[in-house]
Image 1 (tube, rainbow, N blue to C red):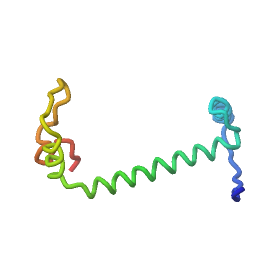
Image 2 (image 1 turned 60 degrees about the vertical axis):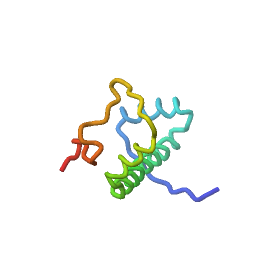
Image 3 (image 1 turned 90 degrees about the horizontal axis):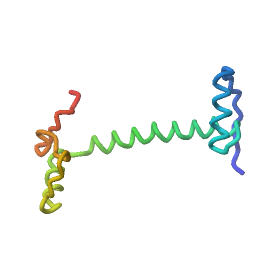
Image 4 (image 1 turned 120 degrees about the vertical axis):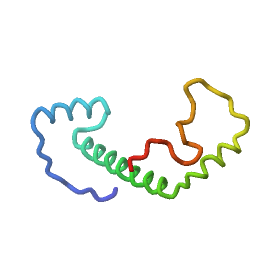
Length: 95
């Protein structure tokens, strides 16, 4: 078994009750629950970094070329591209 670090965790009673309930729902022990929660948080933060890295490598013109290879488009009402999407601008850019 891999080495495990011990951490003293102080929680308010109301939060501890929630932890007990959720640990029971997840069928894990109260001791395992904080480790599982920490692992999920670490994964979420790492994923944001990964997605930001991938987005930084994107080239807006590639999107149109990839769509052009898809063949004849079949219009689905409500599934239209945002205005300006084909030239790399979606109107959703924050700066």
